[in-house]
Image (cartoon, rainbow, N blue to C red; front, side, top):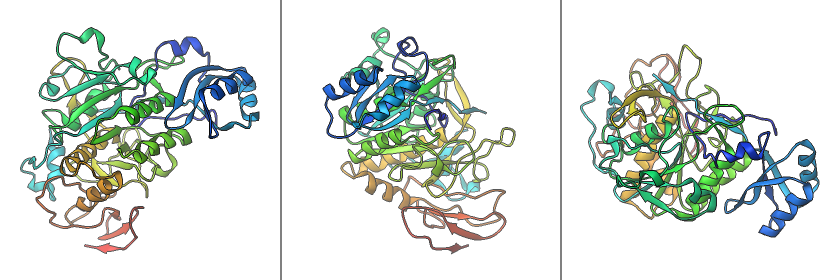
Length: 433
């Protein structure tokens, strides 16, 4: 378990600075202590085990990350004050570079009838925390409030964030990752071309984009946890978190995700691009999170890359599917650059935008209520000759209504008219077109 790898579903992670490589010759471990614990106990546990503390946690759980060899890990496990140890797993971006048809799909029940996305709501006044590689200075965000949280603020748990005004570029962190993943994700949430909730307020909680242990553009689970902890402590409400992340099970990453939900913040996560059951991955398996799969926007079938075998994860924990194939997103290459991207990382922000719209209407709604409202509005595509693969749900975010409505957990079996239930938020009835 301690050497397991974790892969982001086209996401990034909070890099806590280049100094991490200098501190630790190997990947670190994340240590959670049994309650009650204090900062003094944290220091004593590390000192007793002879390990070097890298970062500490005091919100989502009490613990720390540490540089530790096998002997140090064994000493930590021998301490009764230690509750759990997880590898500080490395994460790598798995997004795919492939019109704005995706918005029509959110608003229309039949593909052929796509006639333009209508903005009944814009997410005005809702704070969207994008835990990713940052957001570039791009024309798509000229009319959007974008606040950038400094790396130092996250590490020190300080509330500082700033809006770019053209004069403070030197003091802010922009999207520095080679692929500009965070910029693309943010443009789907609120960008002027393809954004779902163009009145939302974006917060770039930069959690990645550097190299670790010789692996370019890789990320650490502990840094995402640090980002979640920062949002819990400092989020303005109403708030939603977007995390396009997925990978092998990590109990502490799951715990941090659940802690944000328990704090009243809706969390949207990508199902992952491994073409497997998402229940085997973190944080997609967190039941209270909104886990989002990707569909092909031409066929409404589950998105799969035939050439690579990659594709949207699936299964009972996937709450809803949204467009995630060939999305025309903003690129960090320059202020007007765009690129076609695919993956569940770009399906998730469609749902995050929908959540922002619901929070605009009901700003005090709990994550559970938001999830149920969103899933109640989800539609099954109009019945007809099913495409190859599963035909998935369509998520409407305007009041136009569904031509054919069905529970969110129903899916079509290929080449039949039968739907079967696979969700976890409700029962398992069957439905036939």
